[in-house]
Amino acid sequence: MTGGRRPNVLLIFADQQRWDTLGVNGSPMELMPNLDRLAREGTRFLLPITSQPVCAPARAYLLTGQYATTHGVWRNGLGLTGHERTLASSFGEAGYQTGYIGKWHLAPKECGPGPVPPVHRGGFAGLWEAANVLEFTSQPFETVLYDANDDEIRPPGYRVDAMTDRAIDFLRRARREPFFLMISYLEPHHQNDVDRYVAPEGYEARYANPFVPPDLRPLPGNWGAQLPGYYGCIKSLDENVGRLLATLEEQGLAEDTIVVYTADHGCHFRTRNQEYKRSAHDSSLRVPLVIWGPGFNRRQIVPEPVGLVDIAPTLLKVAGVAIPETMQGRSMLPLIAREAREWPEEVFVQISESMTGRALRTERWTYCSMSPERGARAAGSDVYVESHLYDNFADPHQHVNLVGRSQYKDVANHLRERLRARIIAAGEPEPVIRELGVNAPP
Image (cartoon, one colour):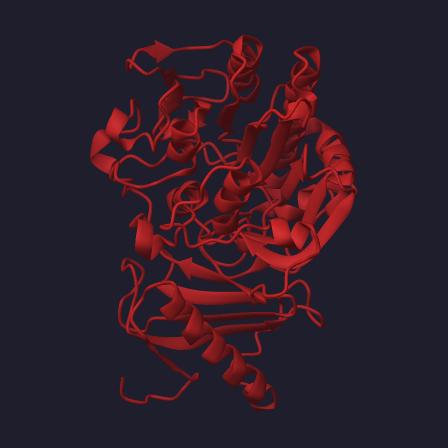
């Protein structure tokens, strides 16, 4: 920071972007040179894990710093009530301008896909140009947003470019007090009505012979047809990151602005279940996370696992804004300063819609259990059964499920107790977690 100013915060949020699409994270496709530069100059996280691998719950985690069974948005179609303490409300109370552009997905289903009533806007009280379910109000070349008065906004061009234009306009008009601006892109999420990843004209053809991530290669799915468009969308995102960075420089804001880039969940291209996410695999859980700017430009990598739930308290802490007691995430600043004495060895994950599940991702292990009784449409359960165990050191692409194997019994026992403890710590009732094939009474 310069002149003792509180930092601005620009939060860039992608939808359904895999962690390994960044060059610094191993992609050979050169899709994101702008973000790769930020990652090298700033702070890059090796194991950022979504706390819920589906759109609405993950967004609520990010904004409230709470687990889904606390904030209540444990599946799509549920919404924030308006009583939550959020990242936006906390910044707003501290005197920040707040702004939101793009996909929201946090108003109740009965509000419809378009305008979002003020009570459901998560504390954003300044600029508002959004649609509740953007994929249902717009097309890749026909963007439809709604302003604070519920009037339509139809910016021209490709959707990522159009939304970036709106964000650039905000940055050029930003007043002297600090701002918190969140731009929530739909891309690289597929366009639902055509079930395709629609890139700008000509971009899909650039990646007609794409690199195929090793976790996908041996598995049936639709990655063969869909990777070129997916990569084209991500290339467009990075070009627009470059435009945002250029605007910060042009306006003299770069030295005072923290830029965060992350996503709600990853994408497994129908290799792990019947659609794109909602599973305990890294292709669903692992997301990009780069933070750049004052306090973060350390040219460093954070190896510990962190969750989306930890981002809100981190940003409030670095800005000197009080962290609400309601937040269950932790500030990552001690990790970044390499001063953390106690940090969880795992990220706790709640899974819905494909199953009612609970999971842990440690540096080495992925461990998941699912309810045998509640199906896929319950917030939680009092009984779970082990369903997945992966050794991510020996099997980084998670092709061999070790659950139930006798030689991993001690590992499973240890992870089971850690999972039970994390479920309780999240505020849920203590569950029974059964070993695979053990029908002990609840």
